[in-house]
Amino acid sequence: MTLKKILILGFFCCFAMASHSQRIWDGEYNRLGLQAGVNHFNINTDSLPITPKMSWTAGFTTWDSFYNDFEFIYGINFFDFKLSMDGRVKQPQDSEYSEIPFTMIGVQANFFGSYKLIDHYLSIHGGPILQINGKFDARQDAEYFFIEGYDNVNPIDLEEISSVNFNLAAGIAGGLEKVKLWLQYQYGINNILKKPTEEGLGEKEPALADLSGHISMVTFGLIIFL
Image (cartoon, rainbow, N blue to C red; front, side, top):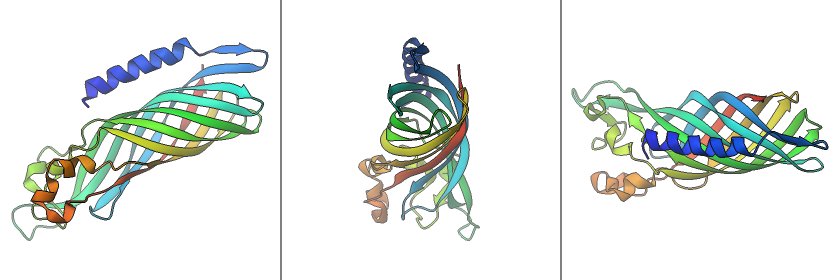
């Protein structure tokens, strides 16, 4: 999915959230918040020399009281994902290996259940996430590189990853009623590296015919409720 489509999708989702938020009555609430933070992104795989990297995340979240200490949390977040793979230039053949950077823009829609451990001050949450991915862009001169361990695979062969992912998340949030910090872990259920194999990567490099990888990510940030 292109960056333009991702941004349009995110805009309409954010508009829908805003139109149904900010209701407070009889101790119950439906609060819209702005959140921003960092993510440490990785793809768990034994087949590629991946190094996780850190980048930014930002978006909107709504916290909706449900029953007693239970809440629903739903939101839209934009992510800049980064990682690197070890590789070398094609010529000379004895060139040293170095990190090849990859970057991708994505958007996530989440729906969590939450339980308040200490009133509004500390809570835990968890649930499913739908993630829409853009292209995993490598450096501009990627065609002149090989991925470490594979003399027939260059970074361009790995740019077209699965455009839709389903993740599970668990996290904790704490702070004041209007300002909170949150920490969260996400794991991808489906194979984010499935598309390269469907497009014939295994014919180019038989060792990658069954290439598999799953998102593993830690996010941390700040929420300010409006």
